[in-house]
Image 1 (cartoon, helix red, strand yellow):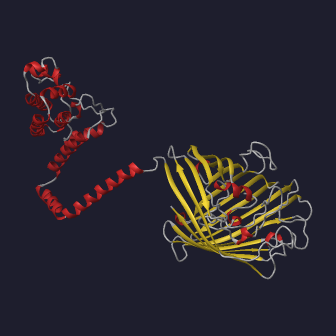
Image 2: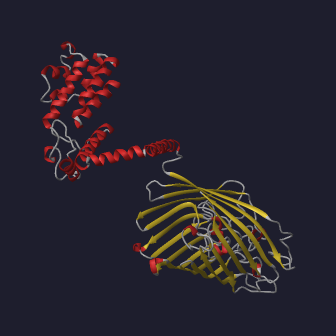
Image 3: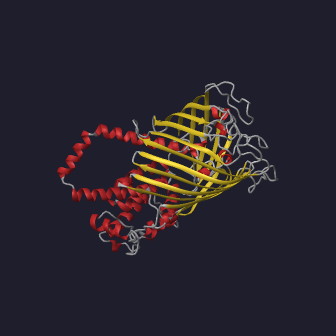
Length: 585
């Protein structure tokens, strides 16, 4: 009610600025005469100021009135009662006076955490007032009125003690001179407050933020030479003519944190099912049952063949039980979220093909492409340069019964990888850095099991950098599987190797840009060969120049080539150029 608010305002103002009580009480009295009856006011007074009756300066008839025993019989009107209450408070305020020593406050002890702050405000500035009973009541929540009154008292004291009349005149002159600017600033602050309130009222969630990634790609590819491209069966043709294509891919991530150090990530994806030349040619696809499989990584464009229907791309939860240990669990994430990272080879800021983004033996294509359910740990040992990571992911965790792959969390296809990294900086101001990652993978994908070892290294010397990967695998193709599109006889046990090297230059012409090129061979093996069948080693090449338009948009012209596709001499060289435009928000 208005009466209670006015009454409380007077009480609070009295506790800090006794000198203002007369004017406040006059205004409040006038409002009482027009806004409420005596009976209503007495009820409000009884509720809001029960303590006043026990104060030492309270007249007997007023104490009885406030106590409610003789209130309606004494004939005291609302105006008289109100003025009487104010007089009592003023008398008590005068009795205690301005606090000149913190010891005058009976409920403030030297052991209190704010004791020194109160002592400074009292003894240095003299701008702290206590309650009439010599208490400070520091644990009680303060109202905005009380804070305003206390702040005003402190400012008055400071201006009286430390500012001369000349200083005050100068400040006043400055205020007048910049009156327009101050008014503009006030308007901007008011506008920001209004916008903040609107955002708070309309925000999607207090725990979840939305981030997005949209990739537009224009692509054209063709073969070099007169030879027809063949796949799976020598003599068959998979490419009848080349066309320019437009590819689109979108990822939307809902990033949720419940503690500030954890992350629940839910990512959806959709695209236009656009193809690049390499994916259209099915480089690396075999006729293994059930359906074409790809153990031999083809080097297709990372953002190709995103379906037109919305799907779940990632659902995982990451948390930190300790400062240096991070744990990830989830029904759908990717081994390469945790291991085999490299600052030059990310699909958003680096190379565009699967082969140059990750080691195909350490992160088999099927797991790298599909993802799966599992868990991972990332331990930065002692907070130093040494880190240990481990991940297990199964690509068919949703199958509750066995299938041709075994199914379930522990059936084919699966991958388990451990990685030990040493990364550090050196040189002046730490502008140079290097990282070496030793890796081991045990996997079963596309009916091929393997134990693979690998190394992932990078060296950054200012703007110039080098990176490289190497992997070697002892593998077994069981169940008639073929690790390459066509092979001689049953594959059985075999040894595979892979390598890639690259170099990059940062901030070339444009700040934030990266020019990089790389080459490598994805599948060197000791399997049998025949004319046109595993008689060459496929070689992949890629170069790109990524430059930012602004903080949210970048453009990456890219050229990619595959020489001797599918480890076959009968296949022509494939080449494609593309322009990738990335929008992040």
